[in-house]
Image 1 (cartoon, protein in one colour):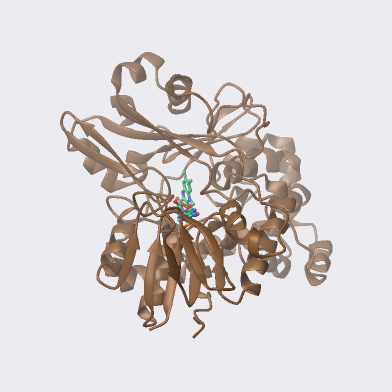
Image 2 (cartoon, rainbow, N blue to C red; image 1 turned 90 degrees about the horizontal axis):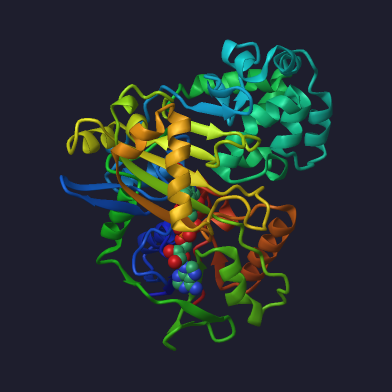
Amino acid sequence: MPHVVVIGAGIAGLTAAYRAVNAGHHVTVLEAASTAGGAIAPATFKLPEGPLTVDAGAEAYASRSTQMTQLLYELGLANQTVTPNPDGSWLYLPQTGAVPAPKLGMWGIPGDPTAAEVVQALGTQAAGRAAADLTTPMTTWAQRRAQGQPITVGELVADRFGPVALERLVAPVVAGVHSADPHELDIDKIAPGLLDKAIQRDSVARAVTDMRAAAPPGAAVKTLPGGMHRLIEALLDALSDRAEIRFETRVTALDPATRTVTTQTGQRLSANQVILAVDAPSAYDLLSSSTQLTQRPTYGTGVAIVLLIVDAPGLDVHPRGTGMLVSPAVTDVRAKAATHVTAKWQWAAQAATSLAKHRHIIRLSYGRITDPTDGSAPGHDTADADLLAMAATDASAIFGLEHQELNAGLIASKIIRWRRAMPLITPENTSRIRAVQEAARATNWIQVTGAWFAGTGLAAISQHVTGLPLNPLQ
Ligand SMILES: Cc1cc2nc3c(=O)[nH]c(=O)nc-3n(C[C@H](O)[C@H](O)[C@H](O)COP(=O)(O)OP(=O)(O)OC[C@H]3O[C@@H](n4cnc5c(N)ncnc54)[C@H](O)[C@@H]3O)c2cc1C
């Protein structure tokens, strides 16, 4: 039986392994960490009333993904998926403070630039400029599309809706959710099909409205009750007697000439095919000695997630819907986003209130890709004590609670730091990542996958893994 070696047991590696065993191959998964899942990971609080487990990394998937839907179906989980509370999120803006995010929108791009909440967020003059999208022909964008030019979210939104709409409506979402600068994020990456529809409808707003009509509020993402990490448990179950998974096994070398994989303990495995499901800088390290690669992709500044367990009756009314995205121009709140986990997910509310009546879970994220590299902005490298102090202050400002109420009700906290799981999308890094992918393909033995090559998120990754050629050499 051909032997397929999968390196990395994140969602990319595990789904690739699952595909490979289904194709009848003999599969070994090698994972550097002591657990599987990578950026899909649980965080468990051991509280006096009992344990409380939430997601520490990814918490949902884009429900438009047919590949994710298919995978969940095959794993027997399709009928368990749940959607978030449809209340929607809020924005924290300079001068204005907390305002509801436009109800009809996509990545902050408004479907109705004349809606009351858009006018509230932008002010009358900038809202008037945003409405120009409805009457200005899409001619130049159609031409650029026809020429195959890449188009960023930033340039499209600034042109169609004006710079204020970009800064106040779209930048908080793109920075908060994608950890990206809108001027460096391709529109097709975050909203596949939107630009073509906008050209057809002669308006980006009308295209957003059409696409949202197909996906009602709250239906854009789904999760599993108990958390997204349950998907990893299900994949491990499905692989349990069909593949060998070795933990704490870092791969240190790949030799396409002899088709051998070497681990940090010096073990050597022969493989007919290698699926490299790790971050691009790590993939570069494994490929550079046997290929012509010279430019290592770089990591971004990373993010820190602060989870707070709070007993606060003031949060029972969900004062900020499912959470808040903070404009990068805001200076009085340092977090880039906050999720009110127990407002967003019914399962989380049940789990928390089964322990205490007014118990809530809040998740704050720190670290934007646009942060200066001198460490002056809070993020991945900020000390625990500083992050926790900041999180308590930010949470009370964001949720409109007295600082004292929040501090008095704070039961427990955890900090989780992520750097490697999030691809750094800059034009220079994108070309370095592409070079790694090409070099792997040229070996005719190694295929790369995972967030750095497929794009961030479970939907992009599962689509990429589905398209991966599985053709082990004999
Ligand atoms: C805080 C946070 C929140 C997110 N929220 C969402 C969300 O809600 N929805 C969504 O769709 N996406 C979300 N994402 C993105 C999503 O989690 C990632 O895109 C995805 O999980 C990445 O999976 P992966 O398998 O490509 O990489 P990873 O999960 O990073 O897995 C790679 C694995 O490879 C291993 N590895 C690396 N080098 C080696 C080596 N040399 N040898 C052996 N093993 C090695 C690592 O230990 C790791 O386990 C979020 C990400 C973060 C960080």
